[in-house]
Every structure is written in structure tokens, then in C-alpha cells.
Length: 81
Image 1 (cartoon, rainbow, N blue to C red):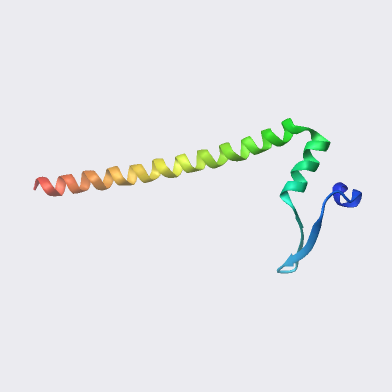
Image 2: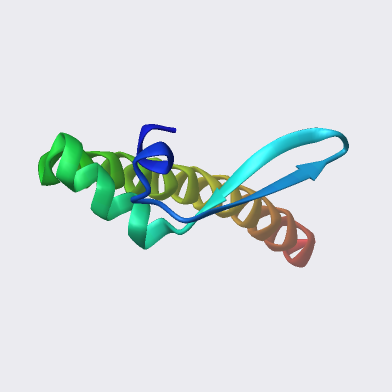
């Protein structure tokens, strides 16, 4: 809100299901964050977000691998009969 009031951020107002929200350009917001809090704050936030996505993807892949291994053993046992 501070950046909007200062005129440094462009925004649009919107509402979904009666809930208002503000739409802000990411590039302008990132530039504003760097000015106010520093580049380290922005990069650490981006790194945390990327790490969270990687961990989620790894967990999904581990689950998928477990399912595939179970299916493989099932098929192998049926083939031996």
C-alpha cells in the first residue's frame, strides 16, 4: 500500500466473489522491494519459494516411484506363475 500511495506501483482493483483484491505488476513490485528492503531480501524470498517447489516435486516423484515399484513387483509375481 505504501508503494501505491507513493505512486511507484501501478495497480488495478478487482473483486472475485465479492472479495476485493489489488493486481500489481511483478516487475515493479520486485523493483520496489529491492529499493525498500534490499536485494538480499528479494533473493532469499525467491530461493525459499523455489526450494518449496523442488521439495514438493521430489515428494511427488518419490510417491510415483513407490507406486511404479509396487506395480512392477505385482506384474513380476503374476508372470512367474
